Amino acid sequence: MDSDEDNGVPIHNMSVQSFAPGKRYRKKKKKKSRSIDDRVSLTHNVGIFMIIGVFVMFAFGLVQSIRSIPDSEVTNPAYMYGDNTNTNNGSNGNNNNNNKGGEGGYHVGGEIILSRNGIVPVPSDHHEQRLMEAAVTAVTAIPVEDDDEDEDEDEDDEIRAPQSFWPVIMEKDDEDEWEDIVHPGNPEVTMTVPQFWSDPLHDKKLMTRDLAMQIGTCITADADGNLQRGDECDVQDRTIFVAIASYRDFQCRTTVESIFNRAKYPARVRVAIVDQIVPQEDAKCNAPIEPCTSSTDTDAHNQALCLYKDQVHVYEMDASLALGPVFARHIGHRLYRGEYYAMQSDAHVTFTQDWDEDIIQQHENSRDEMAVQSTYLTDITNSIDELTGQSKRHTRPIMCNTDYEGGIQGKHLRHLSQPEGVPTITNSPQLEPYWAAGFSFARGHFVVNVPYDLYQPMIFQGEEMSIGIRGFTVGYDYFATERSICFHHYAVGPNAKKRGKVKHFWDNENLYRGTGIKAMKRLLGIVNMNPEVPRSTWDHSEEERYGLGGVRTTQKFYETFGIDVVNKVTEHNLCKFVNGQMHNMFIKHLRSDGMGVDYDKIDYKFKNPDK
Image (cartoon, rainbow, N blue to C red; front, side, top):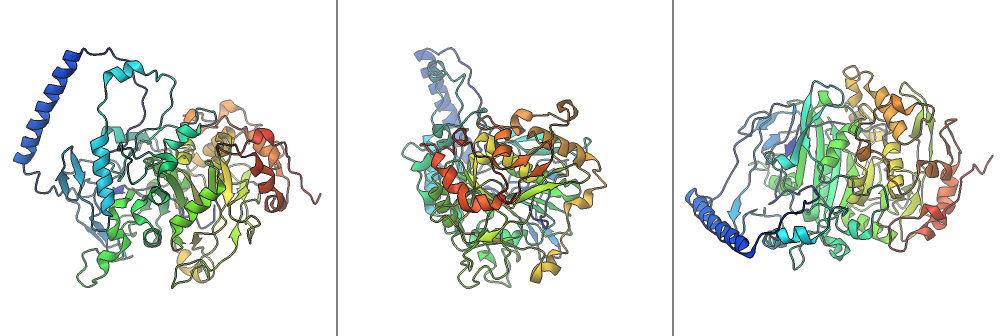
C-alpha cells in the first residue's frame, strides 16, 4: 500500500436502482409434501390475493409515480441514504441537503412502474434499454418454490452461491440486508452495516469450477431468466463491482467520474464507496462538481455522477469513526452483491480509455479462474494522453519486493518500492508472489472468499500480507497486469502540494490508542507469521470467516518465496526470480480446469542468488 493511501470509514449514502436484493444462502429444511388438493387450494388463494393487491395499488395511485419512501429513523453515526439528492456545491463543502428525512435519514427515489409481476424501476435515460428488458425477464422467470423440490433434493452438504440481481438495490428497511456490529475501536458504538452477500464459499478446500461459475451477474438473462450464467455470459455483459475506501479525499469524486467516463460499457459497472468525511467540511464522494440541475451549466447533467448516480452506492461515515483501510474496506466488501468481477482501487486514481474491456481481456488471457491482477500503481505524471485517454507507458510495475520492518505494532512484512519495466511475458498477465491493496482485479468470488477482517482496527502496514497470504491459502494466484489501466496521484512532483493537504486516518490515533497492537497480533497470528506468540494471547473471533483456506499452507508460501518467520528475515533479490523465471516455471502447473496453480507440484524454494 502506498504511503499516500487515504483510508476511511463512512456515513452511508446510497444511491440505488434495482428491483430486488440478493439473499444469502441458507440450507433448506425438508418439509412434508402437500397434497395436490392443498396445492390447488393454495394456488387459488394466492391468485385471489394477487388480484386484490393489484386493485389496491391502483386505488392508491401507484400507476402514477412514487417519488420517495418515507425516511426511517437512524440513530447510529453511520447510515445509508436513498437516491443521490444530497449535493455538495464544490470542494468548499457547502451542502444542499434535500433529504426530507433530515441528517441521517433514508429514502429511495426514482420513478417506479407497475409491471405484470411486480414493481421494477424505470431506467434513467443513460441506461441501455436492454437492461430494463433483462430486469423484467429476470423478474418474470423467478420460479415459485415447490415443497416437493425440498423433499427431492438433498442439500445438507451442498454449497451454492446466493442469487444475485442486476441492477442492484439495497433497501434500508430490508432486515435481510443489514445487521448491527460493534465498532472495533469503541465498544460503546453500534453501527448498522450491510450484511455480506455470502459467507465464504471455499469450505477450506479448492472451490469447484461449477461453484465458481455460479458467482457473477450478467446484465442480460438467459432464456430461463437466469443472470448467473458463468462464462456463457458475453464478456461485454459481465458486471464489475468497484470498491473504493476514501478518507476525506477531495479527488474521490473525480476518480468515480473517471471510472464511468472512460469505461467502454459503463452500464455494467457499479461503484461502492466507503466515504469517511467530516460533514459540512469535506466534499462527498458522490457529489457532482456542479449540481445535476444547474441552470448555468448546460453540460452539468452529463457529469458521470449525474448520469450513473443509480450505479453508485456510498456508505458514508463520520471521519471520527475511521480506523484505517482494513475497517473501511471491510465495509466495502459488505457492499458486494454478486457481480462477475470485483475491483479495488484507491480514491485518487485516473483510468485509461476502455479500461474495463482491457482489464477483462487481460484476466481472460491468464486462463486462470483464480487470477487476481494486483499492483502498486504508477504515478499519473506523463502517463495518460489527455486527448485520447490512452496510456502513454509501455512499462508496468510487478510485486516482488518486500522485507521485515519493526515498530510499535511488532515486526511484520511490508512491501517496498516495486520495480517497473517492460513485461517479460506477453499476451498474458505475469505471475507474482504478492498482492497490493491499491489496485486489485479478480472474479467476484475473491471478495467473497477473502473478506477484509472486521477485527483489525488501526492497521495500515500488514493489510496486504493479511489478504495476500489468506488468498494464497484459498487457492488464488497473483498476477501483474501486462498493461496499466489506471494511474495514481501520489503526493510527489506536481501533485505534492495538493495531495499533501489530504488528511489521514491516523489523525484518530489518540482516540483508539492500543487497538492497533492487538489487531496486529491477530493479523500475524492468523497467517502464522508470529510463531513465537502463544495462540491463546490473540483474538480468534470469527476466524472461520476471516481465517485461512485449505488449498495451500502458509508454510508453503513462506518456503516458496524465501520468508523466514522465525528469524524475521527474507531472502533478498526475489525480483530476479519473479521477472525471469517464476511465471514460466509455475504456470505450467495451472490446473486443467483453470482453477488455479497446483502448488503441490511445485517444490521450488527461493534462495538469494547473490549470496
